[in-house]
Image (cartoon, rainbow, N blue to C red; front, side, top):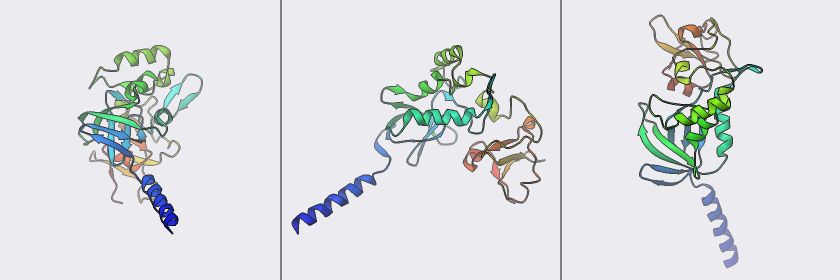
Length: 230
């Protein structure tokens, strides 16, 4: 009876250990735990979101051009590269600031490796010189080596968010799973339409005027679009 009771308690202990949240440790302005990759410059740890300090990665729906392979989903590949680099290892994120969306600006490290620096050095992000010159030298090295997005043509992520495209075209086609239409109406309001909504089929996207496609609603909201009422 005693042995059975001990076995039961051990099973309970294992189950409780498995339910421990992703954040393994937290101190003032520092978090350590497993992360999820939101995009090439944003990590999630539990309910917390971290915008990587000093870098700007291609947006999820952004495409770049390679001289031989043609158009490719550089935003998606940047996120995948970061996810592959991290795997399931614990990451430590140290706060440096907060942005206007309330996200924590942080330098995140995998052991002794600065992941912000790794993204720029590998050519999966540019140095966000508007806010920091910490990774300017890493950008130069990536550019000279033709790494990642530097292997061909691309629009800087900040310019892409403003509507600039490599080849702006009227009534652009959806790319892959990015089928949410970001439309700017006659009053200048930015609204997005989901497939199946009333005006989705009639909405045409003009990227030259700053309209765009989104892969997720969260991405559309972060970019400043609101959901259509119909």
